[in-house]
Length: 257
Picture 1 (cartoon, rainbow, N blue to C red):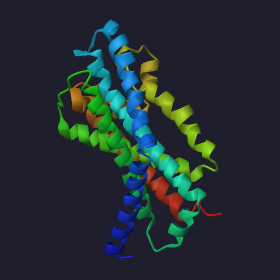
Picture 2 (cartoon, one colour):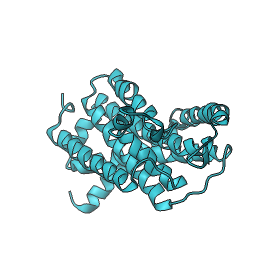
Picture 3 (cartoon, helix red, strand yellow):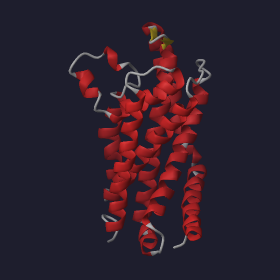
Picture 4 (cartoon, rainbow, N blue to C red):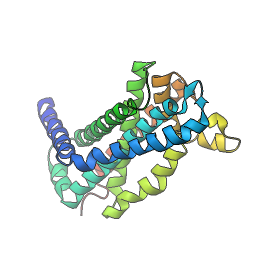
């Protein structure tokens, strides 16, 4: 396929994903907004009033970047895993595989759709947060880059999950037993500097810790880890997961019956 045809194929997949997100907005956008509102009320207002300040910010201000990033990565992951597995279930993937569309176009289309949902939900959560506290973005470029990379990493991870999933229950296993624990242990609600050894060292191997802190540095200007290291970790995951996803697509692993 030439570049023009690739662009048409990419636009078609992205547009279909965006339309899907907006068509079922009561399932894709409203639930995470309600969930995050409850987090702000319970953790930010009730618990936060007893904790006081953290790194010079109110507890509410401190947890906002973590909660926004948590909503972005979980929704990016959930969108692509359910959407691509649905395409597998309906055999639509087989039609795309036999078409002249390159594997990278298919992967990029699904990833862009998932990232779009993550960004939309992230913006909704951030708007809700402004009803509870004041925020001033310290480093706009780092903020945008960390959001983009974090959403991309978990979009790719969700794609790999969907490739290997054999039934709908398999889609829920990773978010329940892997993603949720990593999120809660990723510094969303606390600074890892408060942890004693060996828990602090263990936390440093959690990729979500770097995503949350890079975004927190972009918004508040504070971080538990070096921001350059955090960006490097995210880029490494993007490259590695992209290579794995493309290899699976080209081999047709779990896609051809």
